[in-house]
Length: 329
Image (cartoon, rainbow, N blue to C red; front, side, top):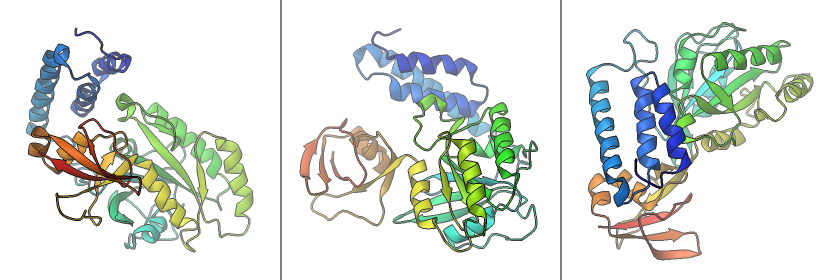
């Protein structure tokens, strides 16, 4: 084993033995490749990891990742990220999605309007974010597709109904049942290690119907129940209260940054940003533009607000929200 492997690598490698599905194994192998230090002493290890990743991808392409009969088999990821909207019957999930996206999911004043998961696109400034409407959960009865779909998400919204007296207890049961199904819903600011992303999801609680008389009492009950475990945002999907703030909070759940590409001698394109995970470097940006650009990378120039104008940076320079990058190869 090469020397100087960080503790995070050893911890992640242990979790590889516990992985049960090909997708979980692939995610952990990719995490290991990202974590391993890049120097001569780890070249054989890097090559081994790349070979394992390649073989596993080929195996996964030969067989479907989701059974054809699964309701989520048709849900391809799109946009800058995926956020799953969960909730109990009549909590207003579909109305919330309608207000956020302008789409027209079936909305009714009766339970279980949503029967199968459905994707919708929410515009946030200059990017699109995929929202998934889901069938409701009821007490301990969680449809099997909910934990399955949640594992594919970059973030989670739980929509609560402030007019229902038993919503707080129902939420507590739901969180416990999801834990039993190996899905942990955590606060929007809680750090999540690379190896935990498959089953630990950043979550925001949306307390809907804050426009209804008496909702303040239910809101206080939710606050007492949750404490500082999960953030709580009161909204009215019908009247529009809190929806602008909610869009920003949804974007923050994704843990991404928007970075703009600039060709030499030309102006940057601010209409089509590249979305990268927080902590990404210049070479990650080059790889997102084109593989050949990363392979032949020489240097880059960076623009950041009014303080940095055309600074020459190397491949490992960390990027921030709103950076403009000019890659030279």
